[in-house]
Structure formats: C-alpha cells, structure tokens
Image (tube, rainbow, N blue to C red; front, top):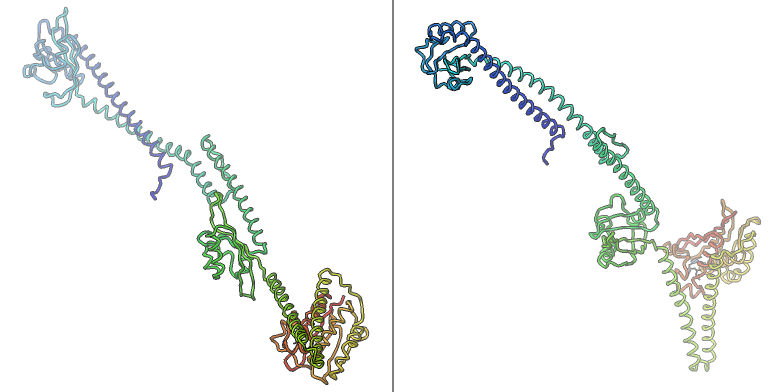
Length: 591
Ligand code: ADP
C-alpha cells in the first residue's frame, strides 16, 4: 500500500507556498514601484536642474554665444555631476558638459529632443554611444515669445539609479526572507494546531479499534472537530454496549449449553463444527475448545455419526437415529437433528442433539427379554402338558400305568407353571410395593426370621441329609418386612440345598458390621463359575438350565432376593468359585 502523507505535511507546505508566493508578489510589486518612483523623481530632478540652467543659458542665446553656452554647460555639469547639453532647434549641439559640441552629431532625432522640439518636456532612458553607458535624459525647450530658441537637456547615468534600486531590492529581499522565516514558523505552528486534535483523535480511535472503549475523546476547540469527537465517543459507547450485550448473551448461551445433560453439536453445510457443548465432548471424548471450526470427521472418528450428519444436511428435515459408542463401556445415544437456518431461512448447517438412552434402552431390552423368557418358560411346560393330554386323549387312558405316569408328569409341569406364576406375582408385587414405597419396615429380630425360614427348609435339607447351622445373636435386629425377608432367606437356603451335595453343611449367619446387618448363607456345594456371577441375579438366568429345571427351579429365585434386598434399601452379593461352594450375603442398612 502506498504510504500516506501526514496531514501536517499536506497543510504546512500549502501555507508556506501561499505565503512565499504572496511575499514574492509583494516584493516584486514594491521593487518595481520603487523603480518607477525613483525614475519619476530623477526625471523631475533632471527637469528642475534643466530649468535652473535654462535661466543662465537664455542670456547667451540672443545673440548666440556658443562658447559661453558650452562653458556654462561644462561649469554647471561639473558642479552638479550632471551632463548638460544645449542644442539649437536644428539639432545642432552648441554646448555640452562632457564633449566638444562641433564634434557631436545632430541630436534632433533623439526621442527626448524630438518631444522638446514639439514644445513639451521629453524624457528617455537609453544607452549613450558617446558616454558608453545607460543614461536618463530630460529635455525641455527654451522658449521666447512662443518660439523655441534652443533645447536644454540634463542627463545622468542610470547606474546611479540602479545602484540605489539594488540596495533597496536587497533590503526588500532580506526583509522578505525574514518575514518568510517568521511566516514558515507561524505556518508550522498553525498546521500543528490544526493537526494535533486530529492526531490525538486518531490515537484514541486506535484504542477503540483495539476494543478499549473505556477512553473518551477530549472535545477539540473547533466546532467540526468537536462534532467529530462527539460522534466517535457516541459510536464507542454504542459499540461498547452492543459488544457487552453480545458477550453476555453468548455467555448465557454457553452456560446453558454447558450445563445441558444432552450433547449438542452444530455443524455447517461443509461439516465443520460451529459449536459443541461439554456434554457432547464428553460423549465423544474430545475437547470442545479445540474442535471449533474443524472438520467433524477430524474431531470425531465415527462413521455412523458422519453418515447421520450428512443425511441431515442433505435431507433438510429433522431426522433421528441411535448410535452406539464403545469407549468407557457401551453407550447408546439417541440423535435428533434439525436444520440450522439463518435470518433468511436458508440452511447453514444442522444441529444434532444427543441423549444418553443407554439405561432406557437397557430397560427396553430387559423388558423384551423378560417377555420372551416368560413366554419361553411357560411354553415348555404347556407344550409338555398338551402332548401328554393328547396322548391320554388318544387312548393312553386305556393303559392305567402309563396314564398314571403321564398324569404325574402333567402334574409336575402344572406345578412348575404355578411356581413360575407365583414367583412372577411375587416379583411384581415386590416391585410395585418398592416403587409405591408401601413396604412397611418394622423393628424385628433376625433370629425369628431364621427360625421360620428353617422350619420351611429343614424337610428338604433332611431329605439330602444336609445340616443347617444357624448362628445369630439374640439381639441382632433390624428394620424389615418379616414376610419378605423370610422369603429371601428361604430362596437362598433352598438354592443352597438344591446345589449342594448330600451330607454337607450350610452355614446361616447374621451379624452387624458397621452400619449394616449381614445375613450370610454359605454352602459347600458345586459353586458358580466367575463368568456367571455378574448376571446371576437377572430374571430367568440360570447357570445350567436343564439342571435347574430338574430341580424345579424357575430362574426367578435370586431375582426375587435382589428385589427384596433393594426394597429394604439394601443389596445382595455373591462370592463363589467353581467346586468351592457359594456364599450369598444380604446387606440390610441399620438406622
Ligand atoms: P433357580 O430357580 O434356577 O434356582 P435362581 O434365580 O434361584 O434360579 O438361581 C439362578 C441360578 O443360580 C441357578 O439356576 C443356579 O444355577 C445358580 N445358583 C443359585 N444358587 C446357587 C448355589 N447356592 N450354588 C450353586 N449355584 C447356584
């Protein structure tokens, strides 16, 4: 860019030029007026000298005495440093201060002489061939009774006038130079006075441009500059207000976005990230500050998200879908997109909102699995019952032993169906009571629960010759629903008996540790492989399906225990290793 001239260097030279031109014009005018004045004065002076000589010359004209005239000219010329020449009307020189008259040529055609012969005073400045220098001549006629007797001419060299004039011109020039210097100083001072407020304003406007609106421009003396400063001040205040409003609005928006649990990503039509909130960054494991303006693909490497965003941009209508993420465990996000529109309703990108639906989807899956499991569990005994009933119907009744056996099998399946239904009903009742908080917890002794549970389980244990060793202080008490807690202990004891070898021992223990009552049921049975433990308390989960069925298990026993523990604000845990027995613990909070 071409470097701009400073304002002062535009104003100052113009001022200086105008001043110098004016000075030059005035000096020229003054010196030429002086020259005229001088010449005029000298002409008058020469005329006066001629008049003075005229009185003396007239006496020697009638009759003409050339020698006397010439002597007079020479004498007066010497005294007054003037050259006098006297000529007859014919132009013949009769007397001259410097030369010998008869050697001089006829002067009638000299301009000043010609005018004098015409009866007026003639004047001329020219180079004298006689004296070899520039001369000023004034000639006047000497008249008698209206007759021109002779012409008298006085002259002096113009070198004298020129010398005088030069000295005056020098003085004028020196004065002019002095004035020019003073004028230059004043011009500079005025230029500075004009430009200083502009420079100050420029500096302050620079602060505005840098975003510092705390300063205000001082009002300069001139009306226009003061108006400009005022306009700039108002503009700065206005800008300050607007920027503050924009910043606070942006901060509010950022705060809202940052505190949203839903992830939000805005991308433009070129799939570059316009904005991303903290929740979205958390989902995709990236930094929101570093992602702005970068390609979505570069920041989040996820092809499903890419395709979704691309589809949203091209389809220009709200879209939704699910996406699965696998860092920090599996996560399911529900994505909803809507087009981003500018003020003219033109699409500039798309806005995607992410909801973490992992829990929701898991529940959905659980429900789906549960329905499938229930159907499956019920279908198996129903199919068996149907088969045997049909066999009986088709004549099986005729063989009483067979019929007896079939009916036994049918009974077994019906029992199984009814235990499934019973367990399901228990489960849903506990769930409902837990959700509705209608379980009434009362202070009670755990030993009482043990006693009634043992009463139920002992016959089964005795069948397998299994000893149950209870160990519980008389005082161990907690807040519980006796029926539910008994059911939980029965379920665990029942399992322990089912999955233990005959002749073994089951330890039933209750004790207080910290702020918990722990109820432990420890067996010496077959144990459970580690991989099954995380899912053990799910509905219908069994380690060995066939074995569980033959044992009359529904796969719901542990799920019921878990729900009962939860309904008491507690939990159930298991420690087990294959072949080394299992220990189930119910944790009940105290206080
Ligand atoms: P089930 O009615 O089949 O016993 P549960 O929910 O009570 O169902 O138990 C789930 C599964 O956990 C059982 O099928 C069994 O494989 C395993 N299990 C439960 N208790 C024990 C235990 N004490 N010893 C070994 N395995 C057990």
